[in-house]
Length: 193
Image 1: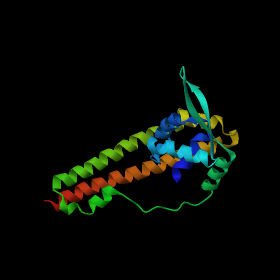
Image 2: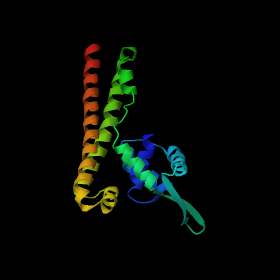
Image 3: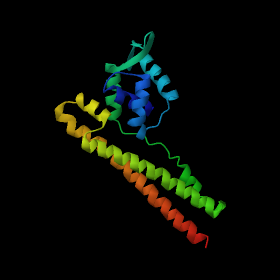
């Protein structure tokens, strides 16, 4: 259900087509909530049917048309209600940690390779998220700039601080995963001497 609120958050900045939403999703909200276009487009249609969005046909190319969406008053109310409700936390599915619980079944080099892959994955995320923080700090984030253009001046500092806070949390999680996987490498070596 969080997909619809991620879409509402993006559409609160400006009206967008499904394609524009997918592109923005990948570079912003997609860092905290993954959704492929095969989930985004049906959700947009459901939200429009429920009155949370209103779509209109706009010209595209010489003869084509695209559907552009904007948030309705009902959509804005639903988003605010969600923002003011405590989350129900889902149970965790963490395949790397599940696999780690049974590494005694793996060949030592395969176990090491799993830990190295984990480090590489999370190191890549660290680099990406540190870049987002840099963009926030330097004022070069395109999506944040558009959001701030529609944000009252009195609320801009909060908007920037919360975006930075989000990425700081993602950075902390990724750093912890790298530390954990490095400890795994040490443990594998210790247990396989």
